[in-house]
Amino acid sequence: MSTTAEIWRVRPLGRPPNLVALASLRDLDPHWRPLQQSWHSEVSSRCNPGWARLRWRPDGLLYDALFLGSHPRNRARELNERTWELGDVAEIFIHAAGTALYAELHVTPRNQRLQLRWPLDAHAAVAAGEAELASFMVPERDWAATAVHISTNHWTVRAWLPAVSFGLPGGLSPGLSLRTAVCRYDYSHGPTPELSSTAPFTQPAFHRPAEWQVVELH
Image 1 (spheres, helix red, strand yellow):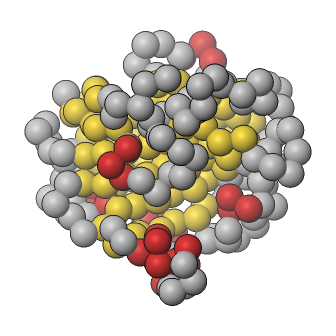
Image 2 (cartoon, helix red, strand yellow):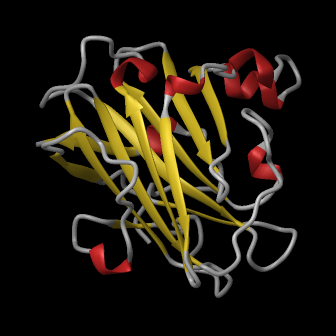
């Protein structure tokens, strides 16, 4: 698969985000981007398909993700637990060019969240044991808004990220330079998760902003 950072052309959202009317399989169209495993020459047979959609308003971004697979579960029961170690999870990354921080949002099938705001070099420090993960957690519950729905053969996530949450208090407009990735930890097949992402990563490591997709706001 190609590992060239593709442009994700994003349509505007004409009304305030609706966290009740989540997407379903019948809503899939060419505006949805498939999750992939670009670090493999072939997609693993264990990889359940998934798709993501992104829309924007001047005050923020609305993400939708739809993941095939039955009985998704995650043991997180409180805000800012280590969700990726506890079961199935959707992960969203967003960075605005020129800002010193990027945002990371996890959403579990039970709508528990992990919220993080990272200086560009901080994740490497945490991985090396030189900094604590908790230092970068966002404790405010209104930092983002999320909803989930579980069906018999898939689960769906919707997440609203206000522009101020990822460093743009002045809001969004066409021409802004953004990068994003929607990623998945899928524990359907056992204790080792299957990873996938909309972004063309060269390795299964999601904290690589240079490989996230370029967002073009229309």
